[in-house]
Length: 272
Image 1 (cartoon, rainbow, N blue to C red):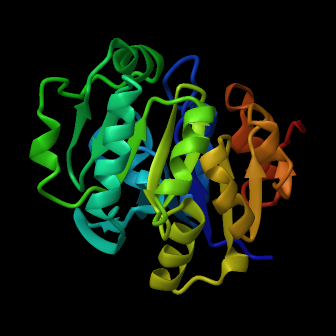
Image 2 (image 1 turned 30 degrees about the vertical axis):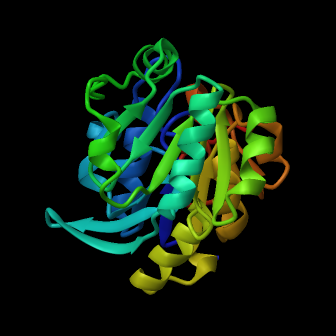
């Protein structure tokens, strides 16, 4: 199988939760793959406005699946070409926000190029700034400013039990959880796997020519969809169970080892 395109989740896959950086081994591995003519794409739950931690490889990126597939685009020669955009129906946006307010939980509201916090609580800062290293969120920005425009994703800080109660009521939405503290809710047509299909069709790629990496629950769809799906060694068991391969962890050269093992770059690989 000839791999022509690599898709990477960010948090826990490209970027370590421990260091909040991309390891030099990953930078070198992606640089080598790019030099061989392989396209590189990001596949993240993060919206565009908080993709702040991949500067070391940004020059290598051909396109992005963002907000869990709600907004996908090609980014070459400093020009952004939108491939797909799926927003949540506004009545269901309101249902989700109302439920979070009843439960006294905050929600990250995601527009195309901006985000705001609805019903702010300190857990947002604890998870995003302290936990994920995101320091670009304006906590004072009114969420109502975004609600006049398409909403691509809502991230309520709710429990799995609350998620199970809420989701059957919003028929046009799906939920993907990669963090115990919150879940990402998008339009039913938006997940990372469908984002891969959209990017591949746009780029003229066969699915068998794609390889995807991830660690969280929101990566399951793309790992299943890709020609080769790779779970990181630090991935949830639900992710590992659907992957074609399990590599070492993000802190143990996981991406480099998988690319070597599959013959995409040269070197000696360590197995998980």
